[in-house]
Image (cartoon, rainbow, N blue to C red; front, side, top):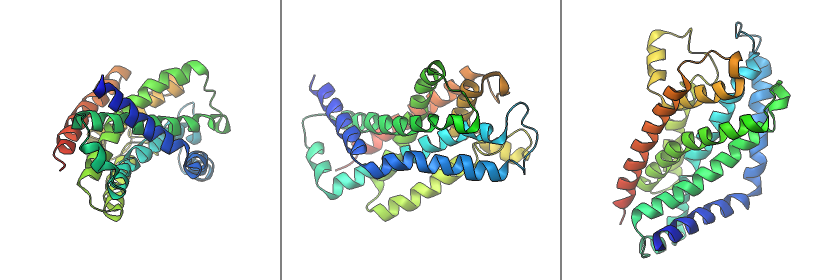
Length: 252
């Protein structure tokens, strides 16, 4: 019970800290809005042949995935903040395991990222996508599955960083390739063969493809079957959670 209580306490702390930061809540709307309206409107004339969907509809699931990716990776910074203010030392010497500490922070950061990703759905009407409650409820576990592994990557990186500046550099170095090579902004059907193979080993590719299947339904021809996407994401999550618990457990 102490382990469960410890996980719950760390989860609740991460969620409360997120909801109290009003600027991050506001950015949940501003950044996706810029991508959908400005970037989407500007680039739709440069792309042709998306079948039954416009370019703005095409990138909408990509913007959801981008929000999940960037938020998940950024959440790793909480480890550095906690170390700077001495809170990390307190929880490391508490009578709960390192695994429970990692899981509690991972679940809290996952909840924050999913909340921020959910805000993007409010903007769906701007691009002509009708997202009903059933579609959102199907997307919810998919978003959680996508976020588990990405949050674990962020926490793993942060646990090895000594400063906020170092984490910011590494985070950007990891985020941008994952995002731009995921097919979020362009279809992967007409790209060079080497780029397609790089995208296939990118876990975010499967997450965005799964979101497009659920959100765009029959309007989208998927890269892979939905069950294949979910299996690939689950395998990535398992590997990253295992790596994260090992690395976090080595902290002194």
